[in-house]
Length: 582
Image (cartoon, rainbow, N blue to C red; front, side):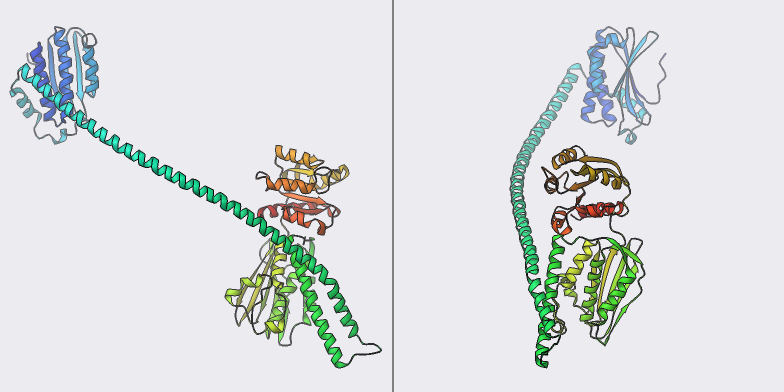
């Protein structure tokens, strides 16, 4: 009885001898070609069929071969060999491995006394576009002439030659690609070497530039220090004789048993006025030198702003022309924690400058709370104003805007520069805006309380001092905001502790046996890992003798005579602020 054909079955045949193997191989190639497989896949199918078929024929079994299409989401060509007798594992040795390499799937099976092996070539992309139906394809395969073994052998040889030709072309292409890759690699290596040489040359240039910049920075620092020392020394040297000149001029003009004539009195007053102008210049030079060198250290205390504005109103009233009205409004803030002397100097400089360059109209000072942390002092005038291109230059030392009032007003050109430096020392800033012919506005912004006043919790602090009595006394003030306190009695011990762990704050005495505090600071600031450690210099020296160290080496300042929990916190805040500014 003829078995029922599946609708997708293409061909069924029996092989029992070597000629049938050639026929199976021929049909396999034809089916693969009809299904749109490329030449290489056609050869793979034919080779797998001939190897499996030859092993089965040699084992002496009669084999049924079925070609069929499997219609699934991934259609494939299935070729089933089935026979009665031993399993595929016993009969197929080398050919099974060959089929596994050449086909997409090889499945062996055994049911009752029937063994089978199914080989599949899957995912036939051309199947949906098949131009003939499976039935038509069956007829075509059934009617195809069976070639002789010699013709099939010739076909195999031709396939082998074609494969060898393809392989040779691919090998030549591979050689060409390798040559191109080698050429490209040589170009990349050459480019890399060129870039490396350029980078090395650039690095040498950068290193040289940095060395030059460091040298220039050192020279600039030396020049700046020399300038500061010159200002300070010359100001001190000039102050005494100028004070004598002013005092003698006042004494001559005071009258007595032999009064001066009107002309002599006028000339003496000119001498006195010139002396007072020179004394103001000397004082401003000295204060500016102190501000630049860090020798101006704020003495913080609560300041009554109502008293400040009343004082300024009284001091400046006599200097205001009749055509100008001086308005000093009630402050919107009662008190501020700052240096009263510095604040008065800032406001007096700014107000005096506004009065000097206002011919008519008004000069007004207002004090308002900017937010919960800052207060703003605003001085506005209706004076001649400043051209836009010179607004920032008025803060340069000795710079004066050239206008019709300058010759009459005089001055040194240090007032606003000095005022801005004081504002920065107090933790604030100063800004100026102006419209020529309409007036000028100067804004001073200061913190209500300096940085660090709200410090309440630090982890580890290091106290370095050789006096055990002071260490014990100082600990009582530090424990209010530090969880752990370490101690060192000299500079070397301090550096050893700092190398082991980094504290949140270092309290450092300057005068100690062996390695002193100034040397410890120098070492700390020279190392990248410790240059930003907040340091508070704790000393009994007067401010004028140590401010250069505190400012130059970026440290806060705390006098032993003024130690309290509040001043300690303020000094810590200044130490943090100095490090951030650096």
